[in-house]
Picture 1 (cartoon, helix red, strand yellow):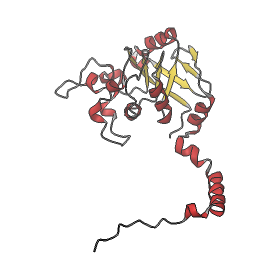
Picture 2 (picture 1 turned 30 degrees about the vertical axis):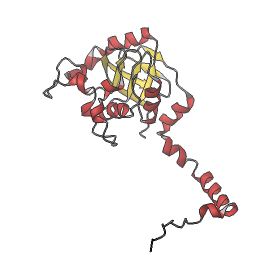
Picture 3 (picture 1 turned 180 degrees about the vertical axis):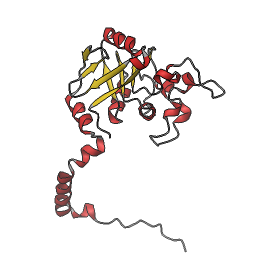
Picture 4 (picture 1 turned 90 degrees about the vertical axis):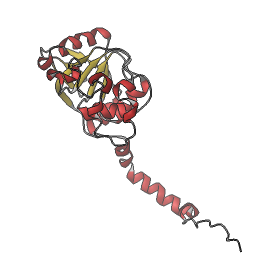
Length: 214
């Protein structure tokens, strides 16, 4: 997983509440198990007409926010089904941070597993950041994970809370697999001891073949 230390970029204002995962990435795009290529289908029904042309009024189709790295949105973001493709699509589009008053629990956890930082702030503070995001190219935000701060273009700073373990993982770029590799020596010692004490567990299994009828 790519390290997350400090992120500076344009913030897109998605002024909606209860955005569910089917809106983030509709069900017809869940056939793939690849984490790439989903960005073009992010918010598919909101971004495109039935003929595949873009809806010019949708925020991510407008020139000022096409390269947005941060999404500022409403409460209960990521509700609905638990599809992990939702954070995959956001990340593939280029979104690395979502700021909202609240998140659905499963989506919130999936973000941390996939390199997206979800920041929950009080509604009033989100409203202030939404006003900054509406400024387009002038609405650049900086998310400083080490200091746990969000800074606006005019110097205003907001602090956010984050679990220390999750913060450590993001700063070091550690996903679940990387965390396992950190314990590689302990795993090797355990397996060596188990081979000695319980060798039958490590014996090659003999395939069971049905008897052939005469």
